[in-house]
Length: 394
Image 1 (tube, helix red, strand yellow):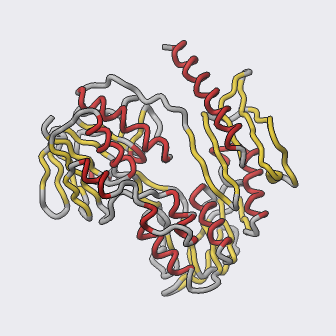
Image 2: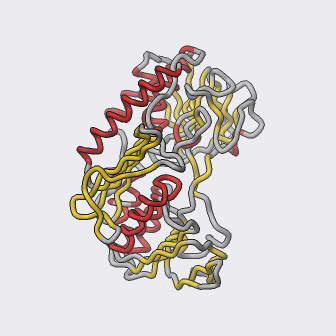
Image 3: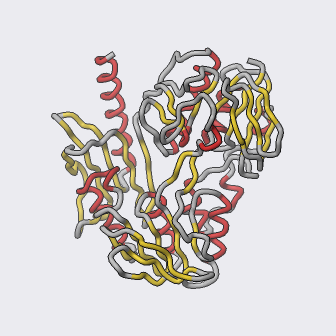
């Protein structure tokens, strides 16, 4: 290959560029990025950056020396408009074209929005520019903040807003936040963190609409209530950025469909990170964005699938001074038991806890709150067990 184009100046895009050089690609490397910023770390946006404990310099994923070593052409502030049917030409929104021998799709995902979210005071939190706007608004004095969505972004943002002294309410349509990830029993434990942090939690009801003319004044719920609000943060998930790929030869369904090696229907096109649906699932986690590029690049340079992604799902979240860590593949019906620590009034006691999810006598996942060392041991054991099971079934 003489030219490889990475579409997406994201975490996964940067890792893909690094892997290309590390695996011996010495040709032309082009990185296209819709945002004007070099790749930056997104997890701190809802935490340390929002609260002012970290500035923008600390978000950078590569310094000038590391960036120069990649010897890449950076086309930033430029959106990819289309990919030709053979996957050999990327058309940009400014009319330029990039002819290429290989493509790494790393366009990530965009925050889902609500009707009426153009009102002043309504925010999403997905990009650096989103975080800048929200941080500036929160610095203007005490606000009544309503966070729509109790997932990880919603919970972390609620925690940060409460820590800044604002009055915060989280609205979650499900009976409990994080049920799909943690199951009802452990989701209830994490819900207790909101209460302990002084944050109101409204569950089991959706949002009917936003109130206000120029600026937001409230959030109307589907049960008829209206929550007063000066600031609304919409955290209802993200949609993969695949619209620009319509008309290409790639299969699209909640992401770019790939095999277990991140390879698409075109062997010269691979996908990584939030936009990639690898082996039937799409994972919006930091670890997926950093682990998939090595396999994807190896297969891209080989021209076929030679390696597959076998990492165990893992994520973490910082909320109300507690670190939540989870690894594994929990399914409905798994039992869960605490093996270390305890609960106080339904919330983690001092020192946190470690819990194991089990099915048919086998551990399927592990969850911890403020127990990092025991968690890492349990995660390693879980990874070894999963590898043995995978080897036995191949």
